[in-house]
Image (cartoon, rainbow, N blue to C red; front, side, top):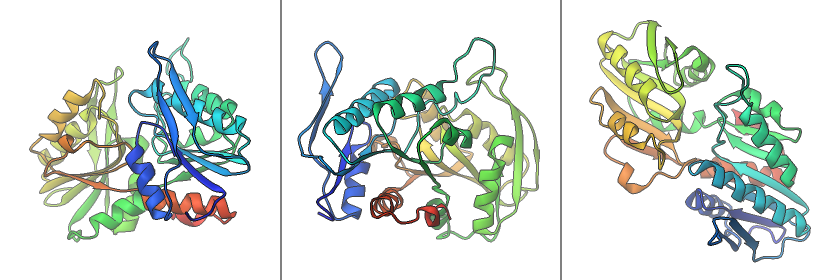
Length: 318
């Protein structure tokens, strides 16, 4: 173990990532019971002493989203009541992130409510990867280390010939993300403008930028149904792109009602390669020749160790 005062626990949403992080830190995941009572209530019990320890709880709040959030809150509360020195919630994928504002009257701001729940449970720090909206950082009244997966994704793509590449933002809201990516690979930028008349429905409007004869890399933070990327790929091929690749941080289709739609997206002949991270665990049966998974374990492990030792985490943002 790296240090007797450091503890890593995991919920059930992505235990493989937690174990990979622990391996990076040359330690093991601490023992805990995380399950469900027969009446459907979540059951949590930490089997190791955490008094005076720096506790990190790794839990992506993915499908089943509400259950994952409840597991996280109960584990935080258990650690706090067991006299942990500090409890940090490591949330590789933050659910409800697309509900960070009101789009009509009489709607909740769900991402803010979830932030309140996690802080009220007793978390004293948050580590997250590629929040869908940067404003979510401000929903917490505790420190948030918002890490970026772009450097890891770019490192993967650099093994390919990018001399004729163009980076594409699938919507106006993702321009900053795509621009950061294209600066790292040294490629031009194209932007697709879209409108979404109703939730989960997409209408592509137009595109700015030249993609003819180029390898188009669509950069997004989240794949759900894949409808945005499907329409973007179709438009890129119509505009003369030689091939279409996709880079995304979160593969949120796994185990969700959108999974069938997403699998159709995976079969789309317009899309040649899809590179995602393991912020959400991807089962082997969802992988095929198109999909490459880049691990964020080293990124999160380094961030956690820096937090534990009181070192700067800012260097990891770059």
